[in-house]
Length: 278
Image (cartoon, rainbow, N blue to C red; front, side):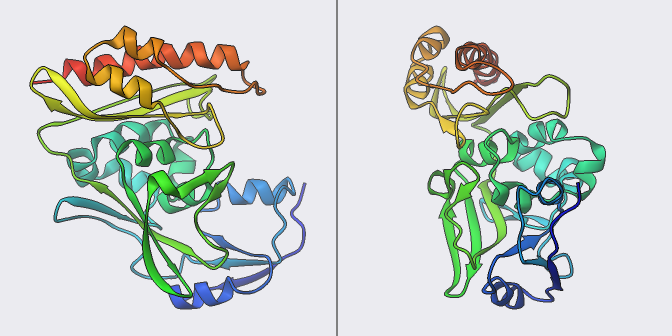
């Protein structure tokens, strides 16, 4: 199937892109790995595509003080190869090989993945697990949005119709940082049936500040706060028993199967966090 007709504009600056988004039914085009598919299936039919690939300064990875900043146009492949990400954002480094296939990672962008907000995608869950933040620019200027407030519903975010995601930031890992990641998919590169991204800090023989972000089990990345508290107390089985997810049936699995698999992944990821404790 071919997409419905649309107009095309190539923005040369963030301000120009924001202005073009003010036109009726406009959408941004970055890597296009999700958007083009939805256009071809006519799940999306914008009147105008605003291409932001010509805007300088929207890519790159840098450590700034105690944060890692990744530009919106940074390709997945660049993040996958980055020594900065490997050293200072190890959870993102673990997730990158699970995102699609090589061709998708060569073109897809981190900003696009976050803004698209697919509930079965890896990067939104990683940002929630890391308690990161999103930088956005709109008609009223620049603002930062915490990830706990960013994902608002199925493919919905706190971005307004004229807001443009320009960067993501996550805390740089320290010697106390512990991360874990696992997902179950029918084939490598498929969207996950269930996945889990996790972070914590070592506190002697215990964990603190545990954040468990499940994906593929709800309309957004889902925190399992009761399990976080149980895991901080040192009990993996108590964390599994406290798992308070209520996934719906979908084309991949029943809700009951998804909840069972979430418990399987929680055991695996909890061991990753605990085995690395001081």
